[in-house]
Amino acid sequence: MWFEVETEWLERDQPDGSLLCVMLEEGTGMSSNHFPLASHEIEIRVRYQETDGQGRLHHANYINYFEVGRVEMLRAAGHNYRELERSGIYLVVVEVECQYRAAAWYDDLLTVRTSVDWAKGTRIRHSYEVKRGEEILATGATIVASVSPEGRVLRLPAWLRYEPGGE
Picture 1 (tube, rainbow, N blue to C red):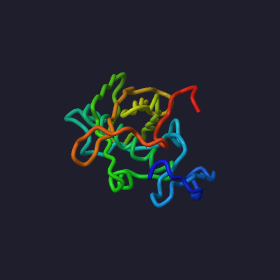
Picture 2 (cartoon, rainbow, N blue to C red):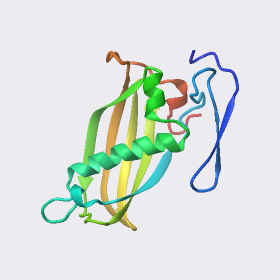
Picture 3 (cartoon, rainbow, N blue to C red):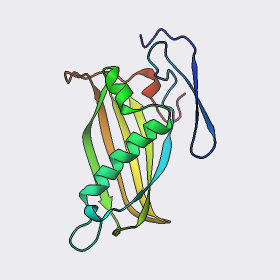
Picture 4 (cartoon, rainbow, N blue to C red):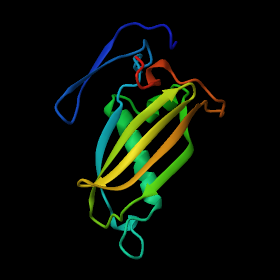
């Protein structure tokens, strides 16, 4: 099914007022072009329950914010994880790293920038930057692998593949 493509276009208004046009694969509702966004930003406000005893954002929550960034990036591109799972593709985290530079505090408004470094074969590498205003609080990266519901490794569909300098 991934290789039999009939042109159908989906148009979605984006939060910034732009219009996203995505070519869909026949019968899947999934885009047939290459990775739809190279980077995306969201805002997250630090909630009280996410802080430690000193009122700082607990270090584990940066990893949660990375996941929110990945999920919302896919959504901004006109897709979602539920679609992927219904099509038999699960993206599981196989590697995560985070470097902490400065503390975030309760009620801070943070910006999480998610970028795709590459997406090829069976894996996607995302990088992240968490900022308060212009101050970088943390950076990090994850690698997710594409697997079937049974846990078998799968090649990424063409629309999810991305190599800098490529098509």
